[in-house]
Length: 579
Image 1 (tube, rainbow, N blue to C red):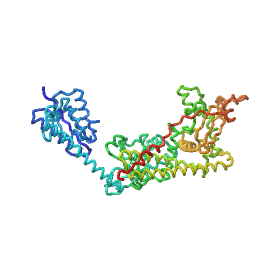
Image 2 (image 1 turned 90 degrees about the horizontal axis):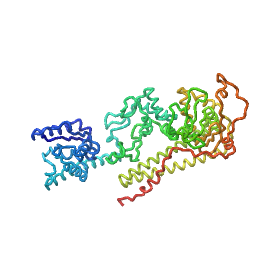
Image 3 (image 1 turned 90 degrees about the vertical axis):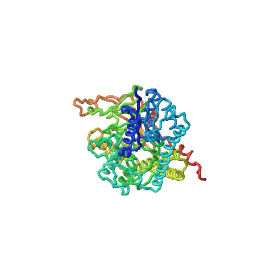
Image 4 (image 1 turned 180 degrees about the vertical axis):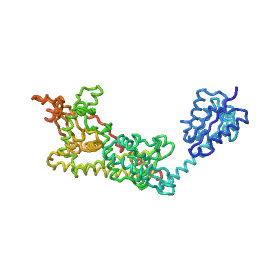
């Protein structure tokens, strides 16, 4: 029976694939087999291109892991020979992990041959003190070489980061290009124009899926650097663009250690942001407006593509607190059915109701209070408050990233100063938010009753159920304005809705139309009959609301983000080791 001989080849980077590393290792294995009277098993020979032995990637998810598992499970003949160029092809991990790997192979019957020196390593040869010590030295040398190289690279890139140099960092957003590292970044205007469109649609109130759909329909060019989907926009692409602060010219360096990449494929954010690193393509005003719109839309977990549900994320069942879902009807008088989510799940029997009995009444109540009317002062206030809320959330994200970085790299004056700076910014923003609330409260106290804005109401109802692109844009913007002005709409179908306004906390009951047959309610119906004179049905919830005794169920909202303050208090005052 012939001895099974397999080879294992590996190189670490894509750059080495262009060279002769793989061919050299393979030819050395063929030469050894020829000289020693063996035949190389080409079916099982293992190859790990671009897998780092220093990080143990070849063992965790490469061919070496497959080989180890086969040895441990007894799937290889006891006299199998493994050919490697040197121990550093097998592993460059720290000595304890490296030696554990070596023993797991040879203790399960594998014979290893290192082709650079022709030495044989198995259960018999490893009993020799000389072989034992030589294997330790060889394994340690492989680790030490990579470790020194890694430290040098870290020092090099750290110096480049501190000097704000962009020569060492070759990647950039897809809308930028440059001839070489010595040349400045240049904007690709065709792609930059598409990025601006994404932000403009987001500012109108469109979600990422809706923007991606429009991009595919209109054939927008993909502006990202890695266009893995070709010319097609996937649903998450607009969101990735909208979160990328490189559009403002900013850049945040990431930690690219193996530990950092184990947490996220992009590495770990440092929380330290450099401005004017790239050419800016988006104004601060458009960025803030788009981000504020996104923060406002977070109340809605799901949205219809045509934005028919202008109350999405703020309308809840008054009986059980579940969200109200809208089931659009393209035909018929009802326009849509508004249904309690728990009723859809078969949990409750909360009655559904037609949209035409609720939409006009609720819109009228909101618009006549002029909370979203064309009032420059109120619009400016809402915009300012949305911007402050967004800036506060950005401070929280930065603090979170800085704390995680501090935990990884240890105490640093630079990081500590950055944390204190962001904390100071957040305190100023909280003060500004309180000032805005006080200002709005004073305006609300002294405002007189506003006349009905019938013109805006008529315009809203005109676009409410139309399927045109113009109406879709109008509904998207209207939903955004309503979400900024209204906290919650508690609704009892065919009876009453209670609108809770933001900032003032005012509760306004709104009487809804009661249920009638379409032929009676719709004066334009083919077989319309005037309604018979009779009293409206009993509506106890409406009576209780008008009397001020109706208490709605607590709405089941999306969970809010936890404040990160407590997470960094325990590390921000860490002692300086240099003291």
